[in-house]
Image 1 (cartoon, rainbow, N blue to C red):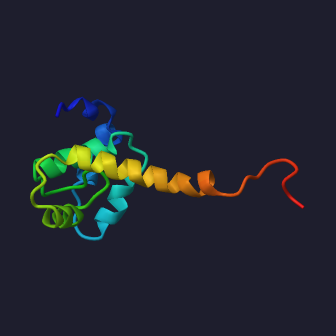
Image 2: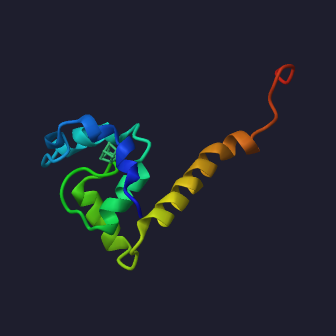
Image 3: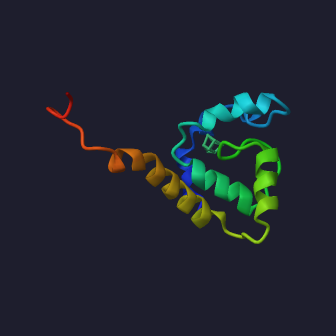
Length: 108
Ligand code: SF4
């Protein structure tokens, strides 16, 4: 996997120390990732390279350890994460697509 995604990292201009905090401060630190467009790639990179420290892709080191433990055979996380993301997007659209037809004149 190339690493051009780093060019679009929200944290690129942040102080690195902000992402390498300990304990409960990590929950606050990972909010920087919320709107980052390369979040999935960042997380995949950290998981593929077994990066233990810091916030990557909106996850703490503990959360990544949990993922790695749950799926020890995965060596390339990007396809898996992207497919999970697509499923989530489809699910979040489902109520709209499957819901009753609504529009002007449908009420009352
Ligand atoms: S997801 Fe978070 S840690 Fe990763 S590049 Fe974006 S802001 Fe930085």
